[in-house]
Length: 161
Image (cartoon, rainbow, N blue to C red; front, side, top):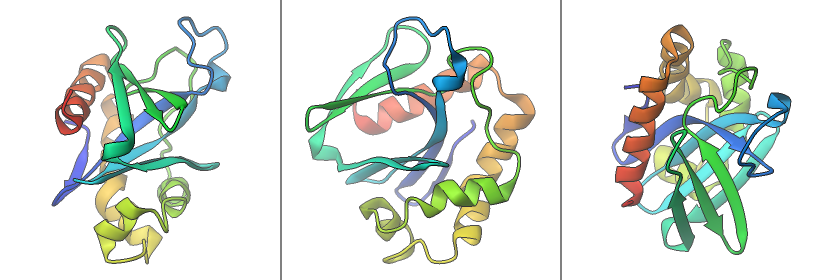
């Protein structure tokens, strides 16, 4: 399965649709990032920055019936995430570990990162390479709908849906 976990920490690639559309006509508006969670916290970051962070108690999740995705609501804001590329032409998982390190770097200071590495992300390259890098590299090599469904199921199981 294309995911990574270390203890309670769990990370998967995820695509965010900031407009939460039913039909996506412009794939360049999709944001590729990673969803990281532990027993109490959840965070999502892209190359552009931290998109959201919350405790799991603050979440309200609606599972989408198609496309292996969900709507996560936190304090009145909604985030539509997919666990596989939702449309042809959407951003792909970065092939370079340095690009992954940028995403991981945006998680520094979040509760989930503090839990993962004892207070800070610390050496971002080690965190990205050791926890997330293999996940993204493996997905880039085989990336198909079956893996998206497996990631969806893994996230749903961990969020209790």
